[in-house]
Image 1 (spheres, rainbow, N blue to C red):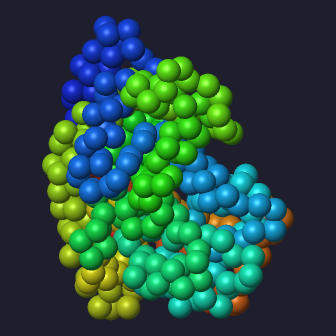
Image 2 (cartoon, rainbow, N blue to C red; image 1 turned 180 degrees about the vertical axis):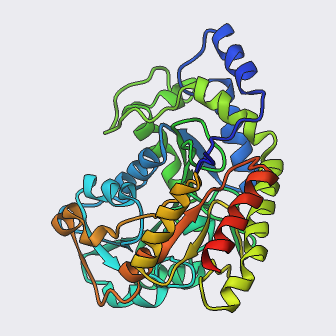
Length: 375
């Protein structure tokens, strides 16, 4: 069986985790947590980065810091994972879904402004497959309407838009280090604070509502419960696992890009024959090869294709069921405008195996099998 995903492993993870155990410091904000935070800040030119227990909890923090109240509205794509929506529901907002672009599967920036009402407070662009949304337009809309922007960059670590790291453009950015991501700690994430006025509040929110971080910096004589908060600190054991991969981040990125480009070039003949469609990468975007997908003619064709790959022991999967059509999506939000592409494009998309160190032998088998299927 060629799996759909294999969590990244570079070989030094166990060594670093043993160091954590030997130091008897396995809780959050230990030495490896600080190393990861500092690496992410320096690499992506971010004002402040804090590891969290998941990409979802990073989104939770961002949503809480947007000061949402009952009746406030948040604009987001329907083609995303439930975590994007859950965080803003938790904060008390109503979800307003808009259509996507068929080329990148990202939110259609031309549909956002029509969805804005007097209750709109936040725009949430989701950088699908590590390919950037049209951030200049989104930031311009946000500025003119005095809205906050939370980037769901869960899939976009190492991706850029016009030279800027995704996650560093909006007010907040959220990364995921789940085992399915390019860099992993099993379960984990990070929040990027791009507006300095929110740094202290983020520390308090992350530390169970206490000013513990200020205490350790010597800014207060003792720490106290000062505001609402929760426990979003990632264990240093998990951070040690992640640190091993950040040390060789470029090697992992280049390996994935090589696989992505091999897929892309191999399937161009199928595109020319009108049998499938491939991902589009806009000129201003540098992606991270988070995933490789193809689009079949329709849902029926995709179903047949996935069944065939299962017979061949190739792990191909479809992706999101649009949130606006899900029971919770109907309960907590609404779709603004027409669903022209969200459902129809979702029905066609299928993801191929993509992971660090996918062997040339397996890659060739996948490509040959898919080419033969469509031929």
